[in-house]
Structures are given as C-alpha cells and as structure tokens.
Image (cartoon, rainbow, N blue to C red; front, side, top):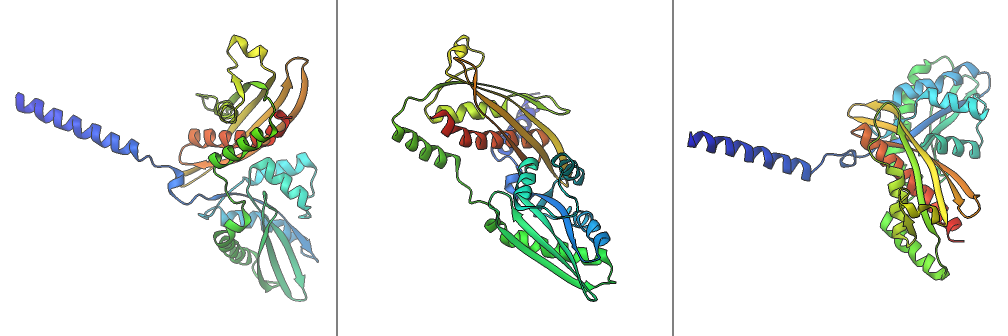
Length: 321
C-alpha cells in the first residue's frame, strides 16, 4: 500500500513537472517565422489580353496559398471591398487606392501587376507593395503568347515568393518596440509642459462565432495611456463621468483563413474621442489588422491589441492639444 502511494505520488509529480515545463515554454506562432498578411489585387491588361489578365490574380492566389512567407486575404474579401469602394477590377489601381485596400484588409503587402503582350511574347509582371511604406519590389516571367497560362503563373508565383522572402524587411516598416515608443512619447509630452486630460475608455468587443472573454483593445488603450501619464478612470467607476475625455467605440474580430497549424483573424477597432463637458467629438478613427497565430482566440486578442496600439499613436496628438 505504501509503495503504491509512493508510485502514484511519483507519477503525479512527473505530470506536474511536465505541465510546468510546457507552460514555461509556450508554443506560439512567433516561434516560427511569421507569414506576412498579403492581399492579391487584380492585374491590369496591356494589349489584347483582358481574358488572361482576369485569371492571373485567382491563379496566383491558388499558387501562393501554400507559401510559408505569406498569409493571404480571401479573394471574396477583396472583391467585396472593390465593390464597396467602387474600384476598377480591371487592374488599374492607383497608389492611394492600393494603400486604402491594405488598410481596410489589414494586409501588410499587396501584390498586383500587369499582363503584357508584345508580338508573340506574353509577359506577366508582378509588383509587391508595402502598404505601410509604399516601397515596391518586382518579379516577372516571360512566355510565348500561346503558352499555358497556368504554368506561367506558377513560375510567377515562385518568383514572387522569392521576392517576399528576400525583401520583406525592405518592404515593411522597421519595427519599433512598444517600450521604446512609450519612452520617446513620454519625453515629448513632458516637453510640452501641459496638463494631460483625464480619460475614460469604453470599447465593446465581439469575436464572431466565439465568446469574448476580456476587452483586449480597451485594456491595451488604458495601459498605454496610463504608461504615458494620463489619469485613466475605469469606465465602470462612478467617477468616469467626471473624466475630461471619453474614448468610446467597438472592436470586432472574425476568422479569416487557416493553413496547416496557423489561423488568421481580421480585427477592426473603431473609436470616437468625445469631450465630456459638452459632448463635442474631437476625432474619430479606425484601424484594421490581420493577425496570425496558432489559436483563433490568441490571434484575435493580438490583432485587437495591435489595432489599439496604432490608434493610440494617432490619438495622442489630439489628446495632448
């Protein structure tokens, strides 16, 4: 009996130790090289190749969906957005329109381009654009005008994949650590030598199809403002009505796509900044992100936090006036 209890105790200790090791080294998507949220836009036709150009974006999507370097935005999402913004699907997208598509989908890279026929040759030219930097890289393939379009696009996809792998750091903005941004912003605010307003934050959240456990966006906004020296009053506190400024809004997250062991979630946070003494709307803003992780709930939380951080960075100048 005593030996049996010792054996069970030993097994229990081993299980507890295994759990402690597992939780002290959590597996996250960040442990692997993160794919980059990417949207493929229509390709422009140059010459009598409208039919070919219309097929390239879909064929490119089919080839790049397995790439470890990109996580694609669904084609239907892009089509719906083009309808909403009344953009041409003929592939003629202006630079500011491309950036707007990136902002509204959360894509960090856009892939677009053109199909060009010169005599008996067919050229497929792709442009890879950083939505936050407007920096551009290119790839192209050439074949005969009667070549199999599927094979040509397969070659183009391979070239685009190489471009993303080699030039992602050039196309994307240099990452700035949150702590570094907080330090520089605190210094800037102190330099203004002006009393900061008291703030209360009320941002509701919903994750489509799943329960929302905690307000990720609201918590992140409150944390950053507190770190910057603002007097933040909890929205459920009786004194919240006395705050100088109310930041209210809503956050929405929904499943976008899954691939292998990764899942992407599209998140959007919209806010209004209101002067509580007279109800004046000081500013309104919104941010969309596409977050990738191993679990849908974690991706949603990370995406909402990222959107909140971007919003706070843009709101600070208005709050500190």
